[in-house]
Length: 170
Image (cartoon, rainbow, N blue to C red; front, side, top):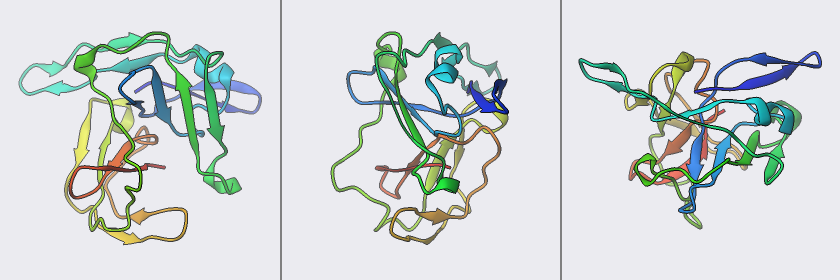
């Protein structure tokens, strides 16, 4: 969880979810509406490993910064016809125990019956949406599904029934 969003020309605190893309472990993926500008990414605090451990509370997080001067790719919010993503370089490589996700060529939501979301609802510890997560339809650019998510879940990775990365939650 972390983030900032621009509203009325100023940056406001907020939360979102993101994930590490690729085996180099140097790139973060989230939504454009979570980190819309390099300025927002530059000042954001990114926490990894923010998880609840049964009977022990929230696990200590690894805090890293982003380097939008090295890489900042984005597409505007879906409200304006975009895909609502931001891809941003991290200040350093993530440690192997944090893991990473890879996009698999040709893998889409087309064959998925359910969509599983790994999120940080309300800026809290990691949560998994495993029930009541049925795919409703698959228009040309977006997949629609029914799932229990809260503010702070934007930018979450979405997985198919067989565990493949298939979408970015908006």
